Image: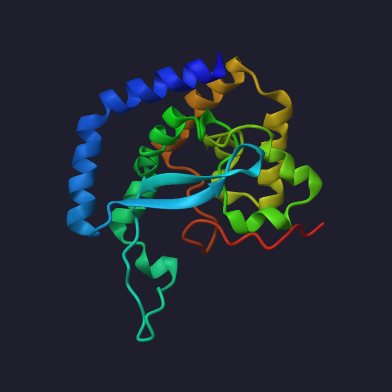
Length: 197
C-alpha cells in the first residue's frame, strides 16, 4: 500500500504542480543562474546511493582561490524563501516516482555520514528515505542530531499507513508556519561528525 500510495501521489503531484514547477524553474534560472536543479548522491534504502534532485537555492560564489564561499553567504533571500516554504523539495517527487524515495521516511543525508553512524543510527536506512518524516514534524533542523536519529528510528519501528498520513498532514502545517527551518546560527544544520554518546 505504501508504494502504491507513493506512486499515485507523486504522479498526481507532478502533474498538478507542473505550472508551479515551471514558474520556479524560470525564476531560479533568472535569479540564481544555471543549473536550475541541484543533484547529489544520497544514501537510500539499505544505504544504497541514489541521485537526489532538488531545486537550487544557492549561488556559485567563490573566493579568490576558486573555493566556494560558505553556505550562509551563497544562500540568497530567494533561496531562503524556497527552503522556508519547502518549494526546493518539489523535484524530489521525481525520486519518489522512480522508487528512490518515499513520501515519508527519514530524510536522506550525506554519503559521508554513513561510516559515522552507530549501529542503532544506521537503522534509519532500513526503510526508504522520505521527503518528510517523523523528525521533520518534531523539530526538523532545530533539534540535535541525536534527537533526530532517535525520531528516525522510532519511525522505522512504528511505521504504518495511518502514521504516514498523520506525518503528511502535520508537514503541511509545519510548512505553513515555517518552523524548524534551521539550527541556531546555521543556514540549515551543522555537519554531523559522529555521536557524542
